[in-house]
Image 1 (cartoon, rainbow, N blue to C red):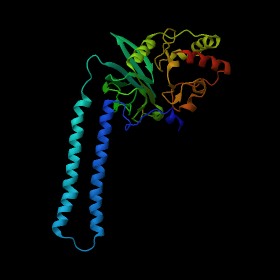
Image 2: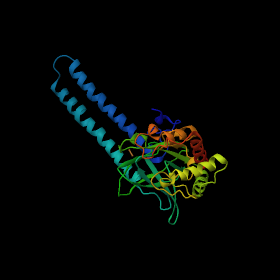
Image 3: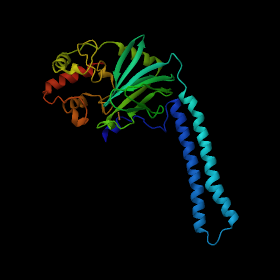
Length: 315
Ligand code: CUA
């Protein structure tokens, strides 16, 4: 299905781009090795007992059964358990006090993302998370409806998002790049279409990006985009969406203040370009069955083009 294949975003736990993820990948490889070893020995003994004809010497049999079937697996599994437990303190250690904190809440079927930019100040975006490289970051996670699960496979472990409760996750990306995050807990119709983009950037690029997000929406330029803004308000889009600096202040759907700067739309299921946006607005439920946004099927071609021009300009 095409939504799984936007660009070539990595979402592999075996291609780690963060400290926690690297430890988890190491653990996987050791467990795989241990599992294969146990399998080979146990199956080897089983084959040996069937294939080699005649009676087996009782002492040898006892040694093989107890040694190969019990002692060896116990030793291997115990070592793996100790290795895994030794990782926990490091993975669970809270990040330093001054670390970047990002609030993310799961909503059927998208992500509300808030950056704390100062005392009681917050800038909101959606379905895209940008992070500075080589900095620990703490996510404070919650849900606005049902249980979701926040997972960026290339950066680390996953944590459930539970209504009425705040869970936390520390990540420490160490490689610049674009990764894919997903919802890892079945949450209804569009669960499989609840993803997000994660962009790990240099510190300087990140700061510049965060400053740009704090600004209000840019004024539309050109007649199409200006008409688009008018239409956006007239059709009531502002009841659900916020565009800072305009009258649109809805909280039900994603904040669109800098929509044009985002990589994808519909919670990372389609590339963010004019064609996909046109289809998203007019055929919403074909693109993402179950989505709460009503489809605006009755917009004529000009109206659709204007709204698209306006939204794509919101950089
Ligand atoms: Cu949200 Cu699955």
